[in-house]
View (cartoon, rainbow, N blue to C red):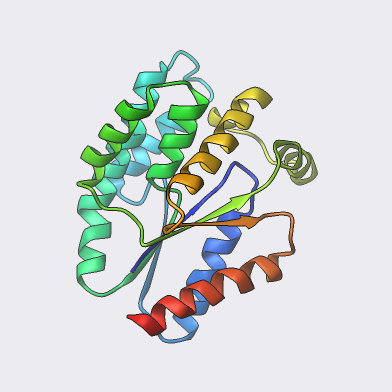
Length: 206
């Protein structure tokens, strides 16, 4: 089973992905948690390039292709072998991030972005995608509260993040069978309960 978590920065998706991974492991399941970009030696090197604030001259197309290159390596080297071995794979971001961030956010042609996504993944898609949705204002409030330093991607402005959020919402509307949208303003426990209920149901139907 392949499960992905999506959302704008600060949505809490990473926390929820890790909580689900831990609970599945506690229940005796073999689980692999991955973050994007990253997960392989090559993908981690690409991650450093993408997030480095010195790389402000990076073009939108270069950004798209670098994210996709990292993902292609991860799918071939890690995700497909793990799924073939019966491991539950959970990713913190996958192709929907590219569609929302580089497509809707950067304004690149959505059809072209999706074609590159399909090439990079050989058509592999998650069985379920949990979209932890929060308003952009909430993202900025959480960022201020955390005091964490931002990376190159996080330097984008409010209008950009609004387009990204709307991009996610459009994907969710187009793929209701795969996307589960959850209000990220709920407590961590409440969100986890919704996610576990969905995943537990999937486990019992396999």
